[in-house]
Image 1 (spheres, rainbow, N blue to C red):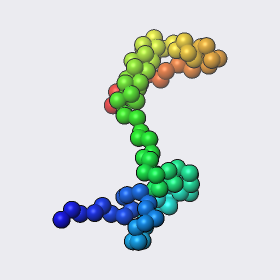
Image 2 (cartoon, rainbow, N blue to C red):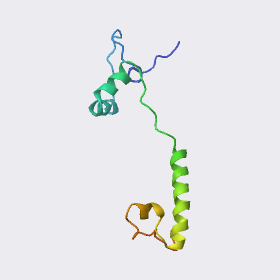
Image 3 (cartoon, rainbow, N blue to C red):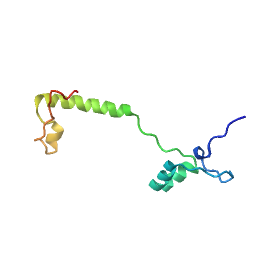
Image 4 (tube, rainbow, N blue to C red):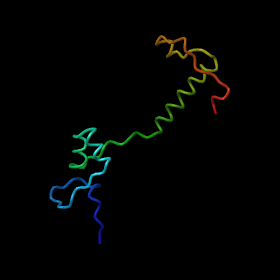
Length: 98
């Protein structure tokens, strides 16, 4: 016998006589954006997923490497100079890697 999915994990179906369960997260989703809630619950359109952390990790690594060069020289990064904050120099400390 095939098991039916829980009512709160499937799109809303007006023909289903069972009560439609709604979690606290569902209520919070509705308060944030009623239209998005309706699209998800009635039409079954999933919310877009979060981008992977690989992009964030790669960006952090590249920025750190670039700023490490200026941290070692104790000079402001050209981006900082361009935006009028040339008095700011990347912080250098012996325990920074820790």
